[in-house]
Structure formats: C-alpha cells, structure tokens
Image 1: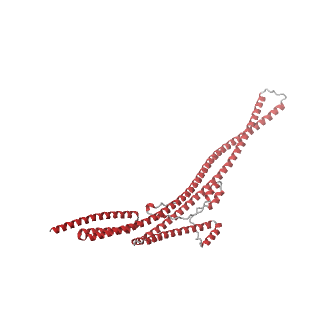
Image 2 (image 1 turned 90 degrees about the vertical axis):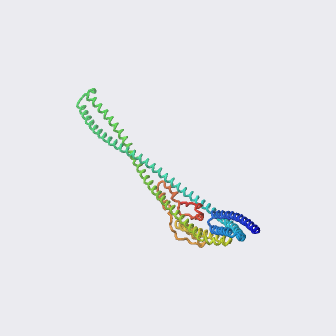
Image 3 (image 1 turned 135 degrees about the vertical axis):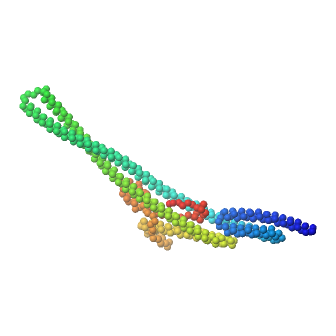
Length: 426
C-alpha cells in the first residue's frame, strides 16, 4: 500500500508538472493567437494562414482535453504539442518574410499615389487658371454693360434736352412770325408817316405822333435784335441735337457689339463646360478599368494563397510580380491609346502638323486611329470675337484648345477604401 501511495503521489507530482507545462503552453498559445490577430489586421491576404493557425490552436486544445482525460499519455501529447509550437514559430518567420514583401509593395503604391497627387494638383492649377480667366472676362463684360447702361441714361437725358430744344425752336418760330407781323405793321405805319410828312410842310417834333413813332421804331429795333439772339440760340441747340444723335447712334452700335460679345462668351463657357464633362467621363471610365483590374486580382488571390501555403517564397514573388506587371502593361496600353487618339485629333484640327505626325509614327510602326471628337475646340469662335470691338481681350481665351490630355490612371484604387484618393473632376 505504501508503494502504491508513493506511486500515486509521484503520479500527482507528474500531473501537477504536466498542468504547469500546459498552463505555459496555454499562455504561449494566447500569444500566438494575438500575433495572428495582428497579422490579420495588417493585411487581408493572410486570412488563409490565420485559418491554418487557428486550426493548429484548435488541435492544441483538443490535445489539451485529451491530456486531461488520459494523463498516462500526457508525455507523448506534450511532445506533440511542442512540435506543433515549433511549426507555428516557423510559420511566423515565413509570415514575416511575406510582410516585408507587402511593405515593399505598399511603398511602391505610396510612391505612385504621391505622383498621382502631384499630377492632379497640376491639373487643378490649370483648371483654376482657366476659371480665373473666365471670371475676369465675365467681370470685364459686366463692367462694359454697366458703362453702356450709364451711357444710355446719358443719351436719354440728351434726348430729353433735344425735346426741350424742339419746344424752344417752336417758340422761336412763333416769335419770328409775330415779329414779321409786327414788321408789317411798322411798315404800314412808316408809309403812313411818310404820307403825313409829304402832306405837311412843317412837322412838330414834340407832337404825340412823332413821339409814338420814335417809340415804335425803338421797339422795332429791339425786337430785331432779340430775334437774332433767338436764332443764334436755335442754331446752337440744333448743333447740339445733331451731336447727341450721332453719339446715340454710336452707343447703340457699341451696345449691339457688346451683346454679340456676351453671346460668344456664353457659347465659350458652354463649350468649356461640355469639355470638362467629357474629361470627367474619361476619368471615371479609367477608374472603372482600374477597379475591374483590382477585382481580377482579387479573383486570382486564392492562387496566391495556395502558393503561400506551399511555403515557396520564390513562387510567391513571381506571382506578385506577374500580376503587378500585368496591371502596368494594361495601364500603359490605355495611355498609349489615349495618346494616339489625341494625336489623331491634333492632326485633324491642325492639318499642317499631319505629315510630321504620320512620319514619326511610320518610323515607329504605328498608325493613327480614326478621330473621334469627344471635346469641342474654341478656335472656331475666335474670328467672330476678333471681328467685334474689344475682341483682343477675348481672343486669348478663345485660342485655347481644350483637347483632352493623356489620362493617368489612379493607382490608389488598389489600396483599401480609406487610402483611396477622391475623384478629381477635370
């Protein structure tokens, strides 16, 4: 019995040691679980390996339950668990290698993202400059219209003065008629006086008839002088009225020209708006192409997972390089198509450059595609602007061609949503 008791105590000691080792193993398993969770938060591409690690942990738990049920086999199970821990450490080292590869890929994507941000800032500056020039032209036209309105008000006041001059002229004509009638009366009185003089041998100069004659004669000369003054004022008013009519006619012509310039400017603004909308459509189309490529890469992700499961670093790098190279080739192909399309539009717009473009393309073994007009050019509006007064200010903007530039695809589409760059409307 004592031997059995000693054996039982020895077994109990062994069991406590096993439990202590199992606790240590449980702590190590907890640390492994935390490491696996961190790897899962860093990248979504390690989900397969995390599942494998969880399977290993679940196997360890099953081994722990079996060790509690059969403590006589705990030594064998403990060795098995230690082997599994060593395998997990080896997998952790391999995961560190894959993380370094992902960090290099992240550095490459960050570089591409910064380049794209720089390009977008340049496009923004160009668009802001164009918008500023349009606002300046708009403010200039508004000031011209305000000036025209002021001139029209002045012309209306001058028309009122013209009406006043007409009224004065009517009064002058009436006064002239009255003066003519008064002259006729004076002429008749003079004839009568002459008859009296011829009939009378001597005339008393202090008589009432002589005084009346002198008074009427003075009034006659005063009336003639006043009539001459009214004629001078009438001539001056008529000259001013003619000058006002000439200025009013000139103002009307200037107002019509300003309206024509305003209509041309509205057409230019509409054309620019359509062109910006076309560029936005192209940018959205390019972004959809990148998203499609990203979906294709995600569909091929299980292949990468199987390659990683085989613990083949070289094969993993080759597959990642293949997919990255495939995306770059597709992006460059789209860029080349956009460049050739732009060259075709340039050759159709500027005919004198067509022979040079065809010459260089033939040397490279390339051909131009058929020209498709996605945008409108403002060059066709410039002759109308130059033909009107003040067209020199508008010709600078109208000579700008709004042909599309090369569309640079957004590399940040491949990143998680929080790192993607918002779409810039051009």
